[in-house]
Length: 126
Image (tube, rainbow, N blue to C red; front, side, top):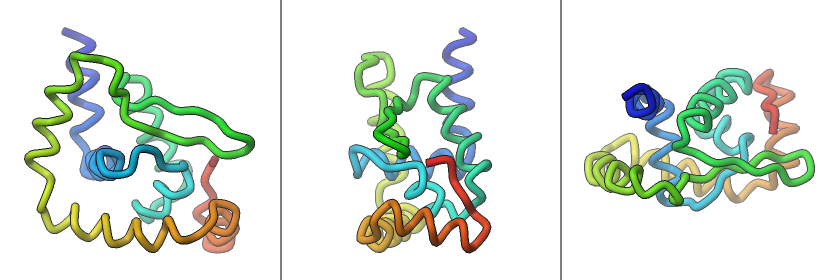
């Protein structure tokens, strides 16, 4: 029961739900891209991402200095939950706005995005 509660808590925040929704469409996103999408400080994005990784909802991998996140599709228990959430967020105004924002974010190289965030005081640990 504790594991189930941890999973549900990891999705019970608007920003974490936005990350989850973005990763349903984009198989993998860098921490700097997620930070930019949420328009939060790197530390804030990192806390959200850590909670989701610790709950088992997300997986991460490091490539050089970048950390990439994706949904944990290997856990069969999570797949029905993923579908349930997907059905409820698809088509929402926030979901559509995030997809448009991500188009712009993904057009920027991670290095450039990270530099931009440092200049704006939103440095991420990507």
